[in-house]
Length: 113
Image (cartoon, rainbow, N blue to C red):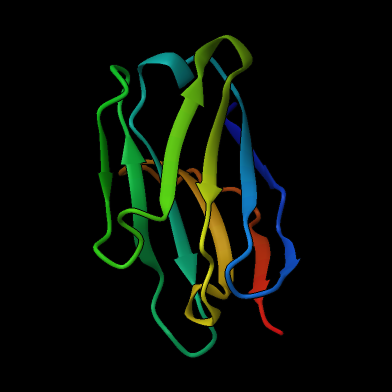
């Protein structure tokens, strides 16, 4: 029933920006806590940011001040605006209905010169 599809990843130089999107199907998007995770090569998947139904947000310390999570309930879409990107941000980024087993397929972000 629930499907999540990420898009917007790509190759960007250090200091550059990308905006990721997560399009959700199903009937719970507007009331769900949503999250972005990422997994770098050889590392565990880590939580990047969350946003609840009232647009309250939380961020990992590593991305505070650089990334912004947002959602558009009318479009059933969540976004991650990533600015001042660093090589250590390189990872596959995943959309998640927070605390659930519903995940997107992931989108690759590579930060390199």
